[in-house]
Length: 161
Image 1 (tube, rainbow, N blue to C red):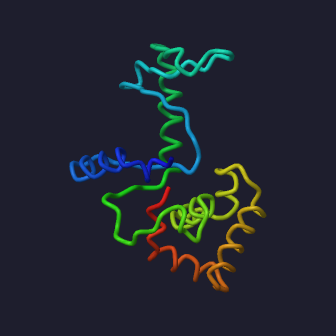
Image 2 (spheres, rainbow, N blue to C red):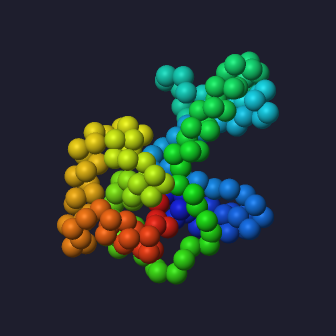
Image 3 (cartoon, rainbow, N blue to C red):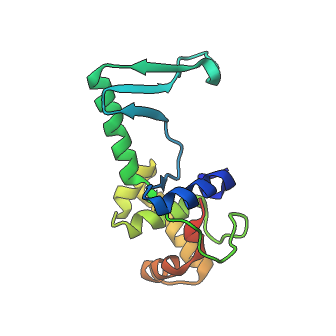
């Protein structure tokens, strides 16, 4: 389940958003960590062979904490802003025209990234990114990426994922 479709997360965003909290989501999984003042960090135990519930590591090394904080900042930049509450439209992932990957590509295009930058960020070739955009344009009956971006700007599908 995507964070954007999780009712508990949506409620948290609806409550905390107006109070100044900022939210972003990624189209891919990310490693979770808590870093406090770049001085102490907690993250899940990922040692091979251990169950997910094995616990957490606490780190006080300033270099490691700074590295984890910088990693978070890079992920934050790639994330798509999430403003609550969702606009009306009633679209669900099951009824959407676009795929999750296509929506990630469109969000990145709107944020100013080119297809090569998007490919690198998502771990695909630029050709694959182009194919996904072409498939969506064809599905919607558009001839240009500009028409596709206009559709995206007004589409309730922007709130999916």
